[in-house]
Length: 451
Image 1 (tube, one colour):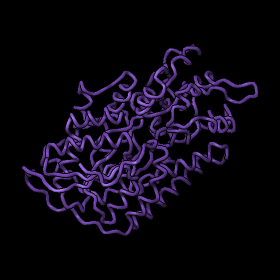
Image 2 (cartoon, rainbow, N blue to C red; image 1 turned 90 degrees about the horizontal axis):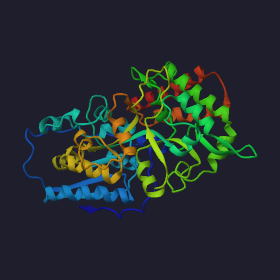
Image 3 (cartoon, rainbow, N blue to C red; image 1 turned 90 degrees about the vertical axis):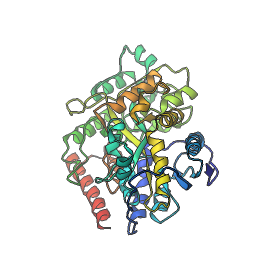
Image 4 (cartoon, rainbow, N blue to C red; image 1 turned 180 degrees about the vertical axis):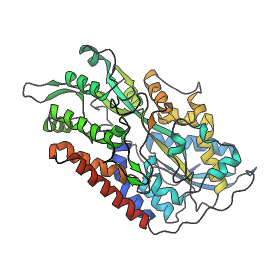
């Protein structure tokens, strides 16, 4: 394994909320108007010997990049005549742009499957390789296999996943008389209001739960996963016709009003950075929070004395969303159509996604949830009780994710923009404003399809 560029210093992970917004414009523009070569025929049998160079581009940096490097080293030991040249710490938008412009990329590993729709046309269809080599879709947990395909094409396979749930401070809950976490959003609100304390000047001292969209992992995608919402129907945006959206937004809007938007904004502005040891859940300023499985590793390192538990995130009662699953998002890996060494590239993809030992090593190192069923069942998987909550949620039939579309993260970013404004109390007829969201999304879809 060789490195194409020095691994940059560690930086905070960019998860669903912030990353979804950042990817929208660049990824879409990168693919517009560019001709992409079609896939060639796949050999009837896998080659017995592989050689040459494979260019791997991925988004990980710091500690996580070292984990990827160790997996690559293991792969090269199995295939001594293959050299993997690693381009670490690359933004997903840059990877997509380099691939679409004909850059030297064989394998691309990106962070959020919501962006797959903007990249799929530049990626090889892996289905013929999977059929030939006996890799079934059901080797993967829950919805991850279908979430890494687009318009009937197997553009990628899942490596690890982010699974979202509820973190709660057991000491603070016990002091308020609670022995179990909430299971519905109304229970979450009731408990949060009771857990919230105020200073003598009326400002917030400790917050039970921060309901603001834009606070850490609170996004339309992650909260939408609690309510069984509908994003699209027959290829068009359908949020205004989904009663779950209206109920969810009304619940959140009412929750914000009960505490006070200005108080929440002032309190939030004074909180520590999400990725630092001063994280507000870790230091006890927020009693409950929506977060991903990676927080377990952060707490272990930064706040080892914190008394906390994890649970599936509460659901909107009456929405049809079953408790126990939640929002998930996979890291995708695929082969570029223009790759000049597709068999070796596919071998690397297959190793990182379907080899049990490699998948366990990847999950243990990244502290993300494995998507491979055999890795989940492996005794070598390091799983504390708090971490196991997310493993179980990843396999739950109620697990969900935002749809993969040709506009990628523009879909969810459009809803985030609306909701961020609406929660301020800007008012207006909710139904009409959601119809405007539909119009904006449909316009983006129409522009993309026209290209």
